[in-house]
Image (cartoon, rainbow, N blue to C red):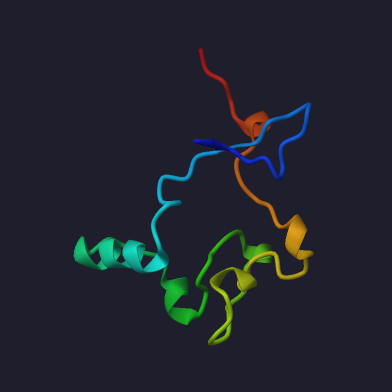
Length: 91
């Protein structure tokens, strides 16, 4: 769990839970192959970083893997994820 200082404000703190954040794509794919885990078939069609349908498109060879996400946005405004305000608190 970490605080995203780029998108947190004085009124609202954005928390992110990223269990794989410290792993490279190669390490993650190594585990997927080693453990024969299922994965989204879009990866085989050039969708390297997969998000929601309108925010995702395939990338071309030699493009950064995140260039297919939020492709219409400015580089500093790309954000999608769980926000503390969207979470349901259960007693």
